[in-house]
Length: 304
Image (tube, rainbow, N blue to C red; front, side, top):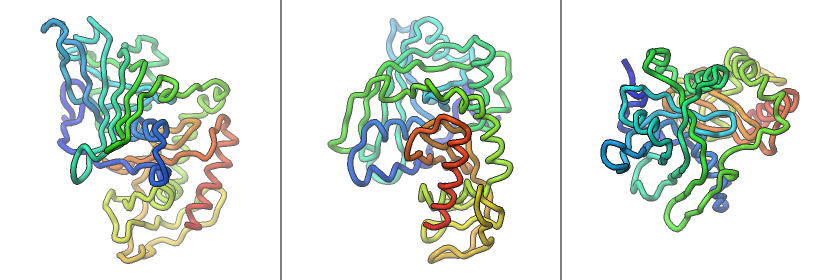
């Protein structure tokens, strides 16, 4: 079975998420922090160990995010950190980009808050949908009776964006206010399913052309850092020729990229262990606005 007793991944390393392009031009602490929160799949959760007079106990856990950006966790009652949280909900969660070179040269985000069980059936169901979209292998154990869904209520954060780049963050810097986006929230699951089933080629365009992942549909980095998807139609647009060679490299297959979720600020994508995010130029709060924006993004991706 993949994963350990608390639903966390056992991988020693994690593919670094692609960072927002705006970072190259300046230090957008709030934007970078939200990007890390949405794209990093595992982090170090520190809880207060009641068996050791409250000393911090850190453990690796898998995570996803709710639509508003709050971390979602799948925890087993057999784990020490869940026992700790049931005694004292205070916790800290460290999310770090793992890549080549000096680990301290890469961005990381520390969150402070309280981790609480989702006892509401609807909230737990929504957490399950979002988490399993990000961690499909967790379906093997997600419904075991000793597992339950938890949400971190973020109170503050600290971002270190690399050397000489640090910022203290408030809850409002990290968590979205979803007021006015009720119709988008209601359409979330249907929109995700529709994009994955009918517009996989558009998702590949978003990932390889707009996010610049350089990862083809099989999760393999391609020469030249770019891939061209197959011949299915993109929303509102023309078909894209299949089997086309990437600049400086060989032809790459299509497929593999899927959306794991969306929110008013962006679209989350995954291909194997690779994750990225397509930020929207402006907040989207209705299904019609989302549809129009995705069509426009597909057009821009084809022109890139």
